[in-house]
Image (tube, rainbow, N blue to C red; front, side, top):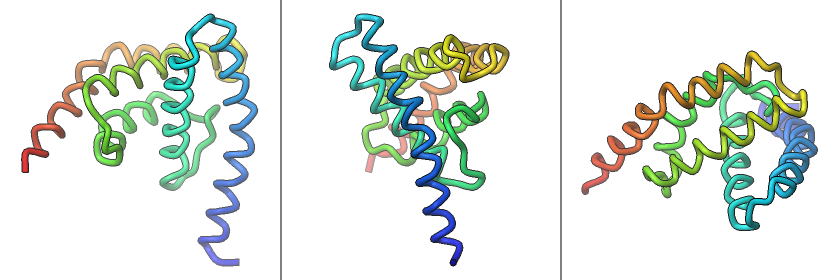
Length: 142
């Protein structure tokens, strides 16, 4: 078996592991009374984050993500990889991450201290995340 087959198998295993978490998050969002459109947006955002978590080594499951993963995604990967990256879409990701990690904590999937660190990072670095997108938008003047 070559390294690409190993990688593909590991990504498939992580996706299979994440699916019940993702499904439970969807149910949690539905129970909170959000509109179908808002729920879809949060799910799409978290799904794209799962792509990031399996893009580079070491590969990471949703319940292994930490504040460094979230910050790296919002400061670097998302602005470079998402054609739709904008200030408004970044604000949408911030909201999705807040909801997702609150869900992870409330359901015991992540330790309270890790949830607190992630939520603090989202709050403390909010302006840095938005500036990363603004800087990237300015570079696209071509």
